[in-house]
Amino acid sequence: MRTEQLEYIAAVTRLGSLRRAAEELRLSQPALSETVRNLERELGVDLLERKRSGATMSASGRELLPHIVDVLDAVDRLRSAAGEQHRISRMVRVGTVNAATVPLLVPAVRDFRAEHPLTQVEVVGAQQTDIHRGLLEGGLDLGLVNHLDGDDMPAEFDSTELLRGRPVVCVRPDSPLAARAEVSADDLLDVPLIGMRSGYVMHRYVHRLLGGRAPAFAYSTDGAEMGKLMVAEGLGATVLPDFSVVGDPLERRGAIVCRPIHGEDTRVLLMLRRRRAHSVPQAARDLHEVFVRTARGLATAGR
Image (tube, rainbow, N blue to C red):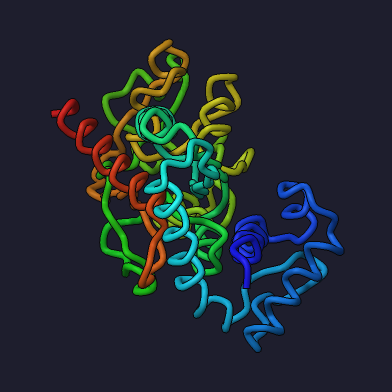
């Protein structure tokens, strides 16, 4: 067994594709596939499930993944202790639903990179279900997801609350709704709404807020960032957590504003999740700590 075989398995798991892993590792796909199969034969288990859509960790592979990570981390520590000047860089992959991108995500990854200049951070925008799947299969190390207070926490993840906010209506300053101190649920029935696609927490929240009345969704989009841009362009209003709007460049520039929803005491939590595992890569643990530190700074500044 060779260390590079374990690195190859980690790359295929992270990228979800033999082809993409081969491109990143600068190997031919047949060579990579044969190397992985040799390791599978040596271990006596199928580590990957190969499908037309890509390769993912098998159930046996997921059980062995923490041990693979242990070995790779041990090799990194050995190289560091030996004073190796060109230590192999590692990658941390973060899945995000695009909430709090500016006030939280950007400062956190910037500070992490300053402390870990050899580690690449890959930010993947996705729906919450896809983020959870990526965490379970090993394709993602950390996940930023919205969570409505009172909903059950998934038991298969370690969840850390980063930010706590409330839903707000995001509009342009020249919108009639911007002139109000609060916006009612009934008001949302009279304006074009920019909704998050089905699968996002805020999509479910809007339907719950309107109590079964059909919202006038004029547009739907993936994530808060595009929603805010569409609001700034005058296409309508959207409902987002306040921590996703306050501090955004569009809000600081005066292109968008937000108003609370009358009578609403629902709280939206921004959660940082990682898979419950015996071993977590050191880089992922370090980035987790940076996220928590950055969130505490935001909470202190907001008081």
